[in-house]
Length: 198
Image 1 (cartoon, rainbow, N blue to C red):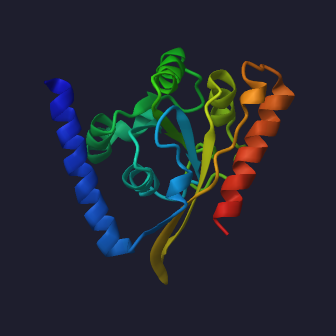
Image 2: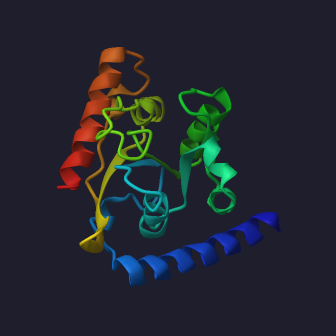
Protein backbone atom coordinates (compact mmCIF):
# COMPACT_ATOMS: atom_id res chain seq x y z
CA UNK A 1 0.00 0.00 0.00
CA UNK A 2 2.86 2.34 0.88
CA UNK A 3 4.46 1.82 -2.55
CA UNK A 4 1.13 2.43 -4.29
CA UNK A 5 0.63 5.73 -2.44
CA UNK A 6 4.22 6.70 -3.23
CA UNK A 7 3.68 5.96 -6.93
CA UNK A 8 0.49 8.06 -6.93
CA UNK A 9 2.29 10.93 -5.17
CA UNK A 10 5.15 10.67 -7.64
CA UNK A 11 2.71 10.86 -10.56
CA UNK A 12 0.95 13.91 -9.12
CA UNK A 13 4.22 15.77 -8.42
CA UNK A 14 5.63 14.92 -11.86
CA UNK A 15 2.45 16.18 -13.54
CA UNK A 16 2.57 19.45 -11.58
CA UNK A 17 6.25 19.99 -12.43
CA UNK A 18 5.58 19.11 -16.08
CA UNK A 19 2.80 21.70 -16.37
CA UNK A 20 4.87 24.36 -14.59
CA UNK A 21 7.97 23.80 -16.75
CA UNK A 22 5.92 23.64 -19.95
CA UNK A 23 4.24 26.97 -19.21
CA UNK A 24 7.26 28.83 -17.78
CA UNK A 25 10.11 27.32 -19.81
CA UNK A 26 8.28 25.92 -22.88
CA UNK A 27 10.71 23.01 -22.75
CA UNK A 28 11.40 20.81 -25.75
CA UNK A 29 12.72 17.24 -25.62
CA UNK A 30 14.98 15.86 -28.34
CA UNK A 31 16.20 12.28 -28.65
CA UNK A 32 13.90 10.69 -26.08
CA UNK A 33 13.93 7.56 -28.25
CA UNK A 34 17.60 7.14 -27.26
CA UNK A 35 16.60 6.17 -23.72
CA UNK A 36 16.19 2.38 -23.45
CA UNK A 37 12.54 1.60 -22.70
CA UNK A 38 13.53 -1.13 -20.26
CA UNK A 39 16.57 -2.47 -18.47
CA UNK A 40 19.27 -0.67 -16.52
CA UNK A 41 20.50 2.69 -17.79
CA UNK A 42 22.55 5.57 -16.41
CA UNK A 43 21.39 9.06 -17.38
CA UNK A 44 24.09 11.72 -17.12
CA UNK A 45 23.47 15.41 -17.69
CA UNK A 46 25.13 18.78 -17.30
CA UNK A 47 24.18 20.60 -14.12
CA UNK A 48 23.25 24.28 -14.20
CA UNK A 49 20.32 24.85 -11.85
CA UNK A 50 18.07 23.16 -9.29
CA UNK A 51 15.63 22.68 -12.17
CA UNK A 52 17.82 20.06 -13.91
CA UNK A 53 16.88 16.95 -11.86
CA UNK A 54 13.10 17.58 -12.17
CA UNK A 55 13.51 18.23 -15.91
CA UNK A 56 15.15 14.84 -16.40
CA UNK A 57 12.56 13.17 -14.14
CA UNK A 58 9.62 14.47 -16.17
CA UNK A 59 11.13 13.92 -19.63
CA UNK A 60 13.03 10.61 -19.49
CA UNK A 61 9.87 8.49 -19.40
CA UNK A 62 11.40 6.05 -16.93
CA UNK A 63 11.48 5.45 -13.19
CA UNK A 64 14.80 7.15 -12.44
CA UNK A 65 16.58 7.53 -9.10
CA UNK A 66 18.85 10.53 -8.66
CA UNK A 67 22.05 10.67 -6.68
CA UNK A 68 21.62 13.82 -4.61
CA UNK A 69 23.69 15.69 -2.04
CA UNK A 70 22.53 15.02 1.51
CA UNK A 71 22.60 18.72 2.40
CA UNK A 72 19.75 19.40 -0.05
CA UNK A 73 17.38 17.83 2.49
CA UNK A 74 17.89 20.90 4.71
CA UNK A 75 15.51 22.62 2.30
CA UNK A 76 11.99 21.28 3.02
CA UNK A 77 10.89 21.48 -0.62
CA UNK A 78 13.88 19.48 -1.86
CA UNK A 79 13.54 17.08 1.07
CA UNK A 80 9.97 16.29 -0.07
CA UNK A 81 11.10 15.89 -3.70
CA UNK A 82 13.86 13.56 -2.50
CA UNK A 83 11.30 11.30 -0.80
CA UNK A 84 8.83 11.40 -3.71
CA UNK A 85 11.50 10.60 -6.31
CA UNK A 86 13.38 8.04 -4.18
CA UNK A 87 16.63 10.02 -4.29
CA UNK A 88 19.81 8.27 -3.18
CA UNK A 89 21.45 10.66 -0.73
CA UNK A 90 25.23 10.99 -0.61
CA UNK A 91 27.59 13.10 1.45
CA UNK A 92 29.66 15.51 -0.63
CA UNK A 93 33.08 14.13 -1.57
CA UNK A 94 32.23 10.82 0.05
CA UNK A 95 32.03 7.38 -1.57
CA UNK A 96 29.55 6.18 1.02
CA UNK A 97 29.14 2.39 0.85
CA UNK A 98 25.37 2.51 1.48
CA UNK A 99 24.79 4.92 -1.43
CA UNK A 100 27.06 2.89 -3.72
CA UNK A 101 25.22 -0.33 -2.91
CA UNK A 102 21.82 1.32 -3.34
CA UNK A 103 22.86 2.77 -6.71
CA UNK A 104 24.18 -0.55 -7.99
CA UNK A 105 21.04 -2.32 -6.75
CA UNK A 106 18.90 0.19 -8.66
CA UNK A 107 20.72 -0.79 -11.85
CA UNK A 108 20.59 -4.49 -10.97
CA UNK A 109 16.81 -4.15 -10.63
CA UNK A 110 16.70 -2.87 -14.22
CA UNK A 111 15.94 0.76 -13.36
CA UNK A 112 17.54 4.08 -14.28
CA UNK A 113 20.15 5.86 -12.21
CA UNK A 114 20.58 9.58 -12.90
CA UNK A 115 23.48 11.81 -11.90
CA UNK A 116 25.57 14.80 -12.85
CA UNK A 117 29.29 14.07 -13.44
CA UNK A 118 30.10 17.71 -12.64
CA UNK A 119 29.16 16.92 -9.04
CA UNK A 120 27.86 20.43 -8.43
CA UNK A 121 26.05 23.17 -10.34
CA UNK A 122 28.21 24.66 -13.13
CA UNK A 123 31.12 22.50 -11.99
CA UNK A 124 33.04 22.86 -15.25
CA UNK A 125 32.77 26.65 -15.18
CA UNK A 126 34.06 26.61 -11.61
CA UNK A 127 37.01 24.49 -12.67
CA UNK A 128 35.86 21.50 -10.64
CA UNK A 129 37.26 18.09 -11.54
CA UNK A 130 34.66 15.89 -13.22
CA UNK A 131 33.58 13.10 -10.87
CA UNK A 132 34.07 9.49 -11.97
CA UNK A 133 30.87 8.12 -10.37
CA UNK A 134 29.03 7.61 -13.68
CA UNK A 135 31.99 5.73 -15.15
CA UNK A 136 32.31 3.65 -11.97
CA UNK A 137 28.66 2.56 -12.13
CA UNK A 138 28.88 1.88 -15.87
CA UNK A 139 31.96 -0.32 -15.43
CA UNK A 140 30.55 -2.14 -12.43
CA UNK A 141 27.10 -2.79 -13.90
CA UNK A 142 27.65 -2.87 -17.65
CA UNK A 143 24.63 -0.54 -18.03
CA UNK A 144 24.60 1.88 -20.99
CA UNK A 145 25.12 5.58 -20.30
CA UNK A 146 22.67 8.03 -21.86
CA UNK A 147 24.23 11.52 -22.11
CA UNK A 148 21.88 14.45 -21.66
CA UNK A 149 22.47 18.10 -22.56
CA UNK A 150 20.28 20.83 -21.03
CA UNK A 151 20.41 24.37 -22.37
CA UNK A 152 18.36 27.56 -22.18
CA UNK A 153 16.24 28.82 -19.32
CA UNK A 154 18.38 31.84 -18.60
CA UNK A 155 17.44 35.51 -18.97
CA UNK A 156 16.79 36.36 -22.58
CA UNK A 157 16.22 32.71 -23.48
CA UNK A 158 13.58 31.16 -21.26
CA UNK A 159 12.99 28.20 -23.58
CA UNK A 160 14.73 25.05 -22.31
CA UNK A 161 15.89 22.23 -24.57
CA UNK A 162 16.70 18.79 -23.17
CA UNK A 163 18.62 16.58 -25.62
CA UNK A 164 19.25 12.90 -24.97
CA UNK A 165 22.12 11.41 -26.95
CA UNK A 166 22.64 7.85 -28.14
CA UNK A 167 23.51 5.36 -25.37
CA UNK A 168 27.22 4.84 -24.76
CA UNK A 169 28.19 1.20 -24.38
CA UNK A 170 31.15 0.45 -22.11
CA UNK A 171 30.24 -3.17 -21.45
CA UNK A 172 33.51 -4.37 -23.01
CA UNK A 173 35.24 -2.90 -19.94
CA UNK A 174 32.75 -4.32 -17.44
CA UNK A 175 34.44 -5.15 -14.15
CA UNK A 176 37.57 -3.15 -14.95
CA UNK A 177 39.18 -1.36 -12.01
CA UNK A 178 41.90 0.21 -14.14
CA UNK A 179 42.21 3.93 -13.30
CA UNK A 180 43.14 4.71 -16.90
CA UNK A 181 39.95 3.04 -18.18
CA UNK A 182 37.87 4.86 -15.53
CA UNK A 183 39.33 8.23 -16.58
CA UNK A 184 38.85 7.48 -20.28
CA UNK A 185 35.18 6.52 -19.76
CA UNK A 186 34.61 9.62 -17.58
CA UNK A 187 36.05 11.87 -20.30
CA UNK A 188 33.96 10.24 -23.03
CA UNK A 189 30.76 10.65 -21.01
CA UNK A 190 31.46 14.32 -20.24
CA UNK A 191 32.52 15.12 -23.81
CA UNK A 192 29.24 13.69 -25.11
CA UNK A 193 27.26 15.75 -22.60
CA UNK A 194 29.10 18.94 -23.58
CA UNK A 195 28.47 18.23 -27.27
CA UNK A 196 24.73 18.00 -26.60
CA UNK A 197 24.68 21.43 -24.93
CA UNK A 198 25.99 23.23 -28.03
